[in-house]
Amino acid sequence: MTTYGLLLFDGVEELDFVGPWEVFTVSSLLRDDADAAVLITESTGPVRCSKGMRVLSDCTFTDHPALDVLLVPGGLGTRREVSNAALTGWIRDVDATWVTSVCTGALLLHEAGRARGKRVATHHSFEDELEARGDVTVVRDARYVVDGDIVTSQGVSAGIDMALWLVGRLHGRDHSRAVRRNIQYDPAPPYLADEPNSL
Image (cartoon, rainbow, N blue to C red; front, side, top):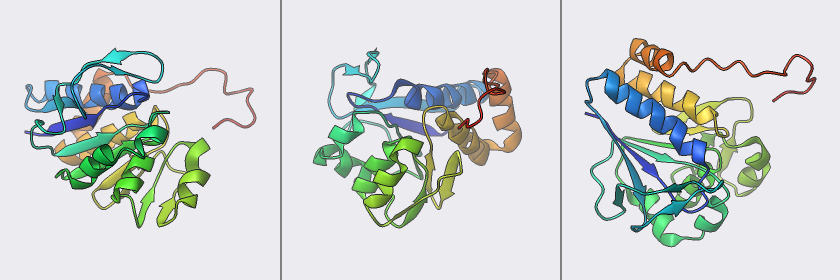
């Protein structure tokens, strides 16, 4: 059994956690519901996400199950939460085999110490700011970066790529391909042909 824990906080970017959540839960479904994915917050009560979605967590920092994977999403809320010693302390201390982030979630990993001395990815607009914090190497040309047991990804949709890589690492490449087919994840963005400087 694999237990995925997805951290939530006010101002979290919706797709940063919902995209990986979809990957993790479909992965479990294809494994006869062998795994669990839980949403974790500092305290009880709803979280208001970056674009207004309201979400209830399953558990808190004090009552969550043992985790195999921790996912730290990004969003504008990271700029506030980087000063929340309870949250960054929990990220620092929580026992998980894999620690992952999406977008500016890398800021929280850095503040918690888990990204120090590591190669990381983050949202393109945040790369310089993160690098300026020191003791981190920002990789600017990869959707996700694996450095030991730390896996970080660029913005929003890159978290889906990272999650698919992770379920492949945990349960095999064929399984990851089956998850991708199930969610029909085959990006083909429109309007790129006439855009000279696409991301």
